[in-house]
Image (cartoon, one colour):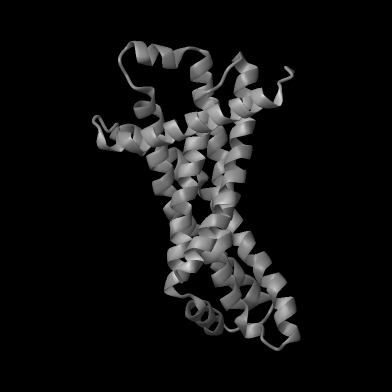
Length: 257
């Protein structure tokens, strides 16, 4: 491993931020330029959205179950077991649904994008696209960004729903709560701002997942070892960015509540 001075490391990181910002800006600007590559967008939406559905459903269901189990122990001490639905719904819709869904999708798709584009980069397929007059950013990056942002919105809604169902299963079978009592409590607890917060976050998270995955894929160097490195870095960077941006978004959205 090459040893670098602190100055060289700072310059390298600054350049990486600049290149990532450039890729992100171009991915948005390309939406307003033809051709739109609708077939690629639909294909990526199928791969990202439908392909991620099983893991999102499982994650949401088990998260709702765990929430119901953990909160019931505390609520029972205060005689407020009927509020289990309220805690599950607010926690899933505001925070856990968007964040956990994004982390699952990042683990599955950011790595996939990085490895796919990284393989194309090291085999010089992207250079061949440029030689033929095709913009790799428009052909490869923009469809992935568009599809990920679009599908994350619906994947989060599904995750929230199955999370509530998971909480209901535990509440009904183990805690003895009435069906109407659980769902009425879950519904009454949600406010307009909770729903808006839970639906805005996945749009930002989806953008992060796609742009980070594409950035590390297009910046791959060093053959097959470089592809493996880019795949790992893409998942780590996307996950950390999602958690960091979640803090900022939560603070901003709470200030408008």
